[in-house]
Image (cartoon, rainbow, N blue to C red):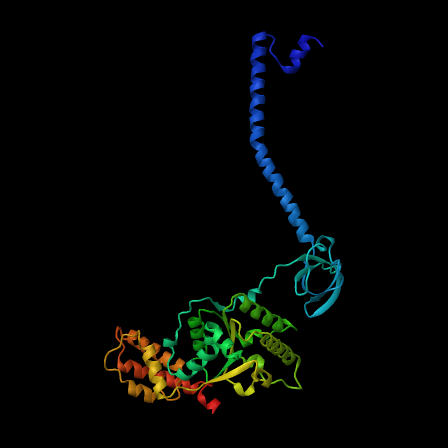
Length: 403
């Protein structure tokens, strides 16, 4: 190839000066392209990383979900085979993945199983069920004290003896050589201060207050209720000192029948788990169990035997002296005039409980607001009493049901 052909391919002008300028132009352009390439390399790396993550995400979407189970027993020293309990209450003998055979496995441990062959693939953390965490758990301090409770002097004295003293001064029982009551049952009419007194005990002992409603432990699937009971008591141990308060105990603690349905049998399983947990409690420990019910007459005798609920405390409807004390407590923060006839209010609120009296004070304040007044008058209280007591008579939870 001659010089002329070479110049034709590069389109270089025939004169030497023009060729040099064109070469410099190409060198500059090459340099600019190199700079642009370096600028695009980080973006390319970022896009490649995103593609890699998306591919891994697609692979994860294609995998079958793992099954949660609990180890029941270890079959050999090498941790190669275990017995697991899966929902709903089914047991399998399964293999353990090679990656976990050097790990410490023990009964009760939560694990994840492969859905195809039920091989144990990983160990799950022993977290408390979110359903249990969602219950009313109040760490101290609780803003309820004995001064906020009226008309329950006898009940307060009994509770302080059997709940507060073992938590605050356990050495007294050790010196005497007796075991304090393990559990206390509050029974009586609705709205008479059962929950309020339990919170006051937790406040005075600086304990965590865990409130569970009995109906929350009734579940559809076999074994769920018993599992929740185990986790509730486990949570109580972790947050000790603890007051564990189960309201509406009759929902799961009623007398067991021979001709029970499948649903009744599941409730009975939950009850038996509660009985088992109560038997496992240390009487001198820092966890105290309080149950509450409006229907003590239908509770299973196994709950009420000594060693479980050793002390039964009745919460009757307040008498006139108790109602006066409750009125004074709820009137402490109210702006009222000096013409309030408390004696008349007491006469008009026969058979009213503490919740009714609190409702009367609140409703009286609403009447004062309705007439644009900053002070509650005696007339406001009279109208509130008329409204609350009329609603009480129409309520199916009135005292006639308990006569």
